[in-house]
Length: 508
Image: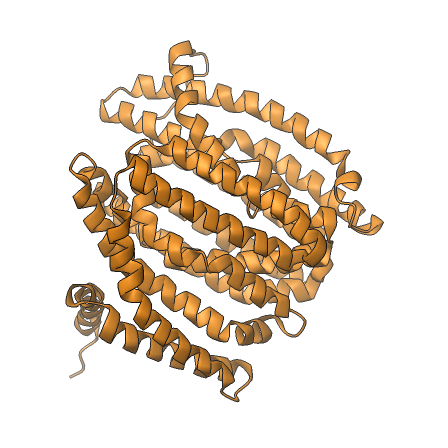
């Protein structure tokens, strides 16, 4: 049963990712054309402001960790007591959050001085709606941790998938009927509330969890806070990149620049999700070898790093080569800055994504404090530089600051790998970036030449995309990958082909 939960949970997760990317590619231009760039910018701004304040403060991970531990020990009462403590903590934070959101409302005109008076009034209305949802939903953040700790992965992923599908269907209906910004925000609110109710029903039906609201233990309370403290710092610092950036633009640029940034950050999210889809699969293995010597971790880091470099390299070479055409056929004219902005914020992924095993090792070795400090410095640099850059160059300036901040993060993480985890980073860089770098540069040069093929529209983009893929795969396959890595790619493909042959209907 546990294996089925993992398998089907993973399958639903990847299905949700595929639907999210596909729907985003189709839905985003439709939404922008229907409500306009300015309203799309306000929509992006409202969601980003709420995301800045509303996150689980690292307590969600604490819920999963402690409850899973107690359930493994067969101590259900202790798990219920722990949840009682967590819900008390969330209730206190929710009161504080309510005060912050109410206070923020009265300073909206002073903060977003580049918005017009009409845009300010619109933003206030959607801010109230989204703030209401945030205050109501915040105490229920631990439900994800409860389902995960009870290994109810199918139920959790079904809820997330249902949320995505409901939002797409409901927003599509709203756009067909000609409704505008306010209707889309209300769909977001009602969809979120319905998902919470669905998760609570699954918890009641499929688990023995019963929260003990009357329980309190000071020592245990401090232990939960201690575990989640540095995770909170890291999570908040990450929000200083994409979540706080629209607010910076709202202070010095305007709603159109926010809309352009929202599109660029959406593309970056797709790139990272696609390139990083394999990362979570290796965390259990990293945990198992953590007690052994660092050479085992480094070996795994190199093997996985080379595969991730191969994957993220295809995405980045493809986007840099024909991303301008993609933006034009996807969104139409007038969005050229989105291409440059997107390139700036996805390029650092070339260094970061292949090192994900090292990031997992940081968590396993409980060096999260050092990682949190690196992320905090990254976030502060982005806000300081972003304010001055965005004032001069708008969305492009802000993306320049993100590019710098991301590379600061990469340098900081490499320092942790070398000095705190004692990993041989020179050997890693030599085997991943140097050995694969020459064929990558050759493939990039040839792929970029596809940009000059005189074909336009979707036909031109698809044709160039196929050429880029063939060129990249051919060069990297022949020169960069070794036999072991080629086999890792061929084996699952052969299994899929074999499965298709087995399931193919036979005709007499």
